[in-house]
Length: 287
Image (spheres, rainbow, N blue to C red):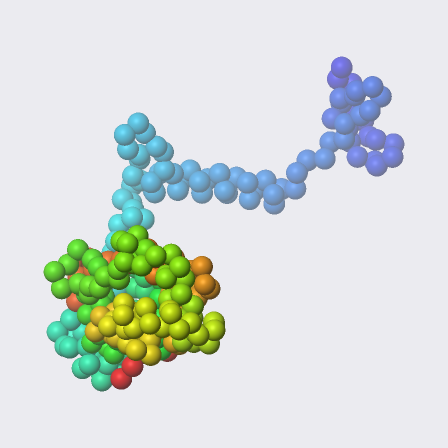
């Protein structure tokens, strides 16, 4: 029940006149500056609701008296950025990739843009920085299946590997066990010989003979590979699918035929060249 307003004996502050179980409520109003700030923010929010997009509806929303749209602003910024880059991209698209590399200004632009483009299109498979993963080549080392020169990298990007493209890079390793070409013991012997080429296993005479009959035509007698066929170097201790004995047996028995998409038609000429220049600059590119 309300009681008469009086001062609290302990604090000296006035009470509100309310009491509960002998406890009296002190009358401590908020500071005026705090109230003024509150009133200002309420007024500001009311003005904001009127001027800018705010109240949602069933199918749309109130667009505000100023007609501002963040989506339109982003689109305008993107258009301005695209227009600013157009002169560089047009030159890159028009020139061959070696000429772009020879122009310091275009090369800097291409490398900066290529880094972003790589993250958007290539990093999901080849990882950030092009370091690769099991089944996805490391683009930062000097081991190339199809060649590491600028023009070779550009061609691979354009047409892909085993892709839906008439000019794609194409190779097919037999499934020696699955197709009945070799027996499992023979496959295991070949695997031992292949691993011995890089010092990972003891030499196997039977495996060497089988290798010479079945594998040397693509990989070479010493296992140094053949870039014209996309046949990997088997003696450099760089393994795309793993170099342990089980992985090598699996590869010989059932083959590995990874696919890289052809980016021609998906990306424009300037973008493909910028990506090729960036990949070439990762550290493993050849002259």
